[in-house]
Length: 125
Image (cartoon, rainbow, N blue to C red; front, side):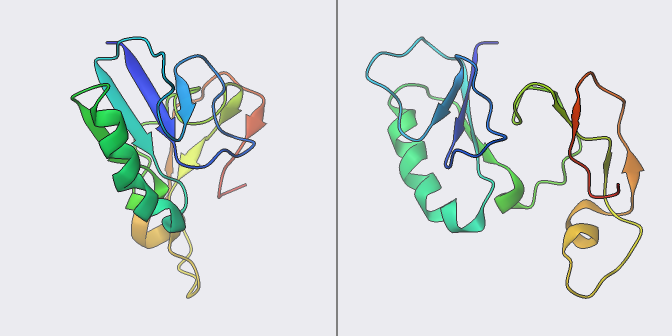
């Protein structure tokens, strides 16, 4: 499947390959079967609907998700929503700190399969 990944905000972790886009679609664009709009920050949720409508003109199948939409992070694929080389080794949390939303969103701690990469981003290290 030919997939475009769209990000509402660019960070140091945002993928930088040819199929990763920030914001609105460019004028010239390859044909995509599906577009995933990944939203990291809750303050970008409003912007997401505008982006979805702009990308809808380029591709009929639009999926919206990400941390701002309480994604549990069940399937981590290196390079998909984080830049290549960045890995996550676990999700969830064994603690129940009153100020933290990770246990409620991601559940109890669970290990993810080890992936190739050299920058570990993990709540539990």
